[in-house]
Length: 375
Image (cartoon, rainbow, N blue to C red; front, side, top):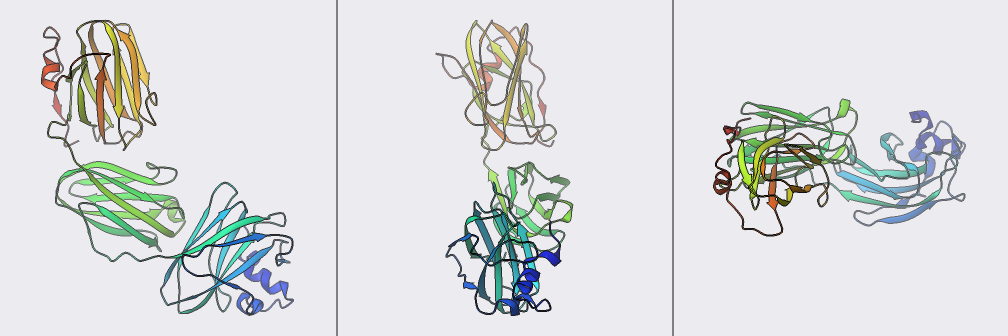
């Protein structure tokens, strides 16, 4: 990354031949006005102003902001370049770079009322191409605790920021921390729980999924290695559990079973005994919108595994099975607690409850269930 001496502020000063001037004085009134929620289209070409410091080209925009007003700038398009924000006196406020295969989002808070200027520039002398730039006002978080779920949109300005989650309804909570501005780290503390996650969500985003008792919890947001800042979103969702949710190991299933399963907090797994009273084609599905599911079926000469054999990231096993008893392992690839729907089906047959399945093969001993809700 180029140092501050090669940033656009210095380039603009050199461009008018006044090396001692700041960027604000260098450009005069040539910047194009940029308004909130009105995307502007531009392109860096050989006709764009030239930075004599490195030969790159740039375009300038200006915004009139109130003191402490928070702004999110998004740059998309084929241009491989950067966004730089300056106060009117030429002081650099923030800067971000992007590559050709990803967009760029830069978020900042105005330090005083006045005019701010945004420079879009190529990352070297050979960087050209079209782009779209949009400014959005960020409404800061109001400071109220999240009650049993909800969403927070805020700016990360320090090393770590903390938020309160009030849980009145015990259950399974999924907490997602997402940002296009920095690599997120999420932590949760309270009521004998202390968990942290870095990349459990999509890309470099964070995710925690776990059972929470009633109580007050603290959610911590920071950037990996404390390097980065900008806008983020914190989403908390409470998943309703069925009254007969399976939360123990050793539960018996049979062909026709369709049950909601709560994976263990310790390892993101749940173990079953699958009873097949007569030989035939069997299909097993593990469905979840929370995690990437996996399946493993063992017993006799059978040893089958699957990750994404079903739709999306859902697991599916299909096989002609001899009559007998099998061990079925349902798990999440992320090794996290989650709700999974497990279906065992054949070409025909009636659905069986868990109690019916346990008696489908009376000669087969079933592993003693162990309550793992607290794990």
